Image (cartoon, rainbow, N blue to C red; front, side, top):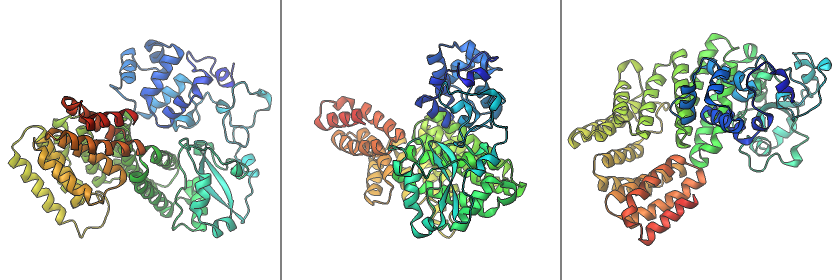
Length: 529
């Protein structure tokens, strides 16, 4: 019997170490994909819905079934804690503090007893004391000649000492390209770096998967030291400088998204959010509000990334978290902005009425929204009206008003909705024309903007999928198939499930032309992707 199972001898259900350490479970826990967690427990342990419900507590078999089917999700912190305790999942795997049934951390690698190899020998009489931070610190060189970088090793937050001379004489990004990887790393840790990846130098609560200092442009060595100190003693060192550092890391991740895609951007964003959530508990109230404002922005971005990965249940979790943090941070603009994001997600589900009412609610004056966001909300309202079959004159009136608003936003500082420009407006208008039964106009608009070459790689693939859909509806099967094939190549490269979903709909529309060579080639491209 493993050590974790020994600790949990009084619990009715403890998932086996083999399942806990499986790649599927590790990935599901890292993203808090409870649908997948419940499914794995159900299928791999043979536990019935009733047994799972009993283990978690305050849950019915029907709810377990709904969670596994994706009808319902899990959002509340207390429920997440009950899931960890009910299944025997260590707290750090779900971004929680250590659970009451977990043993004390041992060893300089910072891995708790629950994460060590199955069958590792232990002696209860020689366990380390509950606070091992002093012992851990003593194992790391703490001299003026080294700088501590918060990075990720095998999905865990660690602080790594790197020589000052190394940082000052090399490009930081070149160093970190070798050192900073999450679970998505293809090559693992380079052998030459194995001895440079050292022990944990922070509280166990910082063992969060995903956060990494990937971009250190414009950050001095002294600034890095300040961030590392803030992570170790939040109340003393955490200030506006560190908050702005986190904000800059988030902006870097947003820039990377269009080029790399959601799968490669998510580990950084999730880890950053884990650190924000943890540190917000220890900082002063004024800094907490600033930190949660950044957290709300990051949570919204995480929700978007999960939308692109077509995991709507997880996207909803992060959108709700963004709204909660924006409320606590007293950020009305972010709250109104989240109504826009929720409206856009309702479009993914083709829920026209909810999409329309959310867009209208977001236009209330109490949100004090930037002009660009107000313009985007009007455009979103027009899309909802188109889906509900309202007259084209009313739809175009909304679109024209949105364009007028956008023209007045040129002098405003960048911030919420900064991405919403003339090209974005025209692309969204094209979607509205498609829904309004005018796919020919939509196809022309899509082609005009895409040919300008201003879109990111991921967005080019997505809107080419929309263009293919408009062409198919216009009765242009060959051109639709050719555009769809090009879109599929991009979708495969950036792993955009949202784009693939649109292309699947295009293929259905082209089914009457299935024997044409271009359509056959398109079908094969989707099969490969």
